Image (cartoon, rainbow over all chains, first blue to last red; front, side, top):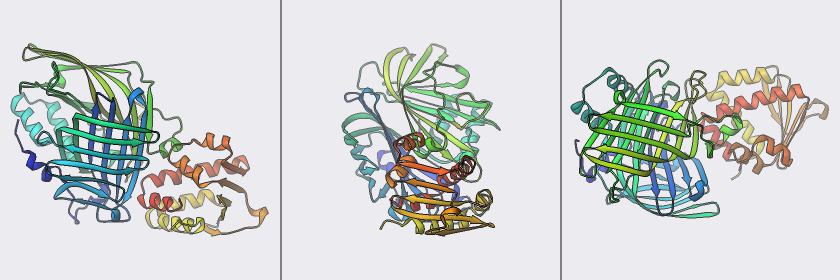
Length: 372
Length: 132
């Protein structure tokens, strides 16, 4: 794996604002996703800080801060606040997102997330524990170590079309307090994660993906360093898909299982806690409840290495985003899951239940897609 | 400072004229003939759509009004934020709507289109929150 350094976070994870002369400025969008799960207090969090639209047009561009929290007993809290650009500062020199009511600041290899998103209050310190990894690094690494196939090229071309930026901070520590109506959650975990994406595209042109990260704690016996997955849909109607699962062992080894080695099965239907964002979605589509499998299993085998991950969602937040230039809409199902990992990688066996973030994205309400 | 209802409607029309002229023409066409009384808490505004024009006034003759909508601000924002469904708002009496079924159906389709537009327009969103 190509490496970068903790010192690089400040510029690698900065906002990549497009040129003021860019012809696709109204389609610009970029965000940080912070994800964590505290196994002691059983609190899951997904915090998204985004810029949408022309960042130089104070009337049509805007910022947004979103929180999806799942507490013990799978109690769900969600919050979404839009932020006028005149009250928001982002920069191409650092990853900060400073608004009046909520601020993500960065100093000394550590984020601080402080303030309010609607009725959710955040006071978190988030030190970065591992250096950033970019989409290019991941892609080159896979291409260098695996036989190239058409699926790989198709997905890579689609991702390159959509994304100008794709950065991950694979491990974060998250410490602090979150207050939601009627509840105070304490968080102290070393299994946080951040991704940072940006591009200039319309949501109506995206066929979607399934991605996620098992929030592993390699300090615990029997857990790998990291497991992440991404399956990207592409083609005229999303009929093609390619992706894979990357397992990093605690000993520093790495195994990639490509789509050609993976079988995926979905069963049952999720009936647990759900939330919808923005709230107006419930007003527009009172009966909209995209189907979510109760269980999704990925199984893979490659010579002596085997892998099976069974994902069971605990809570789901459905986010519907609409396109700018057409009526297409995209549904994000953000899921707090538990993942039953059974694997043998490089002779080491793993058999653990690990908390997981799973994001499934697809065009909304497609007649030929039962999960839309 | 909190925005007054009539000022809000005037500014909303400006946003539609500037950013969504085609959709505004369609809305006017569909709403032609409506005289709509909107009561928000204690504020009143009458929206009249006649001959491809929209006018916003503080009152109209009683026999001209064919739709009356009464809603509180707290209910409006609870509905917009998904905390309350329309059905629940009707049940609690925080939203009351009067008019012939046919006219109400027309209005519902118009509201739906306006709300749909609002999702893609931060100007619309921020303007609405100035009412709060």
